Image (cartoon, rainbow, N blue to C red; front, side):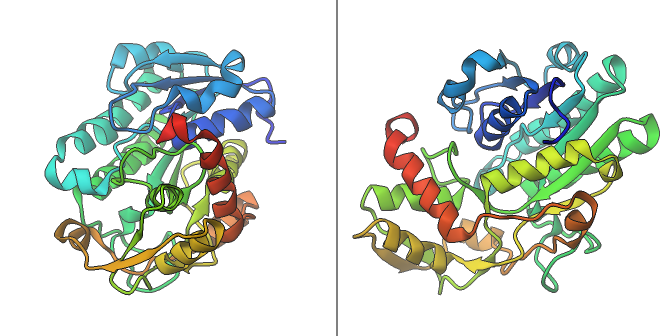
Length: 327
């Protein structure tokens, strides 16, 4: 157990992919979570994500950019998991303002609310491995200088720096995490702009070819959502994590082609279609990326336990059963 039993917890973006899986874990551990979500069209918020635990949580429809709402919601919380964000790399190329507005301003609003109403709260925030930019060498450790390519990644890095500033200047305890490619149940499945592995699962289940850009040999450390949630929970329970940037990834990388080939085994009849990169994807593609997780292993005792094959099998089984709520 994490020591969060009985604790009052707020999850921003709590009806989304990672937030809802986190809420389920917290309920199982005896915590008292409140999830808030703006339910912006096209993002990951979905009331179906918390259907099984609806009676065990409080749900608030609120936007992290709303200062009055955040001041009310952070009050009395032991932990704030700040997961609300604009997370589409492709969308940020055509419209950068949601990244700036939600990721940067939203984070500042949440932390300012804590400063004013609840300076004792612990804030755990989810960022992205994209904050590093293209990898100079693998695996990528937290000591690697950041050189992000796009507005989305820049906005996430800015939000992380805001967290660290509030820790240094105002004493608000924050734990900034950099997440790798997370996949699994309860993810957004209606379009392909974020969550590439989950989108591959939908294509396979619908009998559509899985597009593989280039040779498909680009490396990623795909992480099953339960492992990601475990890292979040551990980060909230370890004082040594405060103020530390921590990679949350997998130390056994795979290629996009491997993902497609496993799905072809799990869903017979699945086809793989090799294709050229679109201009948008080529502009955003950083090449091989593998997280160095030595630091989080040392500080939190965390490491992933779910293999890619097992995670994909669980993901396929979930969406086979509940596709009507997600497709």
